[in-house]
Amino acid sequence: MTLCILLFEEGVVVTLLRTVRRQRQMTLDVLAEQTGLTKSYLSKVERRLSMPSIAAAMKIARALDVDVGQLFSDQAAEAQFVVERATAPGEQRYRPVAAAMLAKAMSPFLVFPTEEFSTDGHRVHSGQEFIFVHAGTIELNYDGSITVLDTGDCAYLDASLEHRMRSIGAIAAQVVVVATDDTQEARK
Image (cartoon, rainbow, N blue to C red; front, side, top):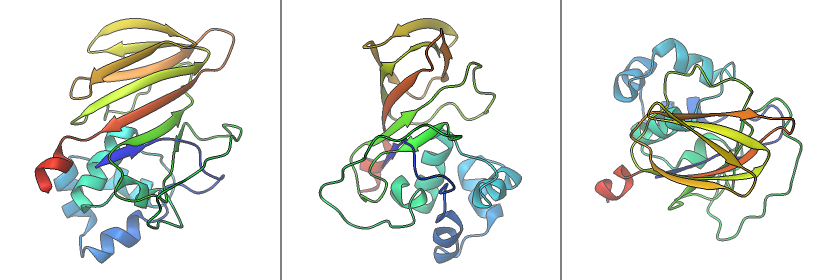
């Protein structure tokens, strides 16, 4: 299972989480227990009051045994080819790529980091991440060590260690993140 982060149309954030959870006959209490996330936080995600981080979305998708794209799309379906057209970042910090394409081996996202490091407490997940700075400059805090990445720079990391980024400089950063989840192979 992998997670993809790119921008979706405005207002479309985790629209299927409640539906998939109910299909699995799972309460918020059980989902909270299986993900390590709070019931309150999961409720906010379901009601579109909070946008989960990549790590949190991967935990939720793993607990529900679904592709993370199913949680970010009104039109999740089997597809072999998906094109995503450029759009303005808007209010969203993450935008999943090819969310309608299920059973992906990787989860790509467009990330629009803010000027402050995220205070989200969920900055680790199993698997690995590839980070490519498409525009601007970021500071990547990886396991307490700060690295500056400029346009065109990339990093590959073990996602089980704490990691987060923030935009620095005059140009708002745009980052491509491709995440994988080791537990997908273990479930097969």
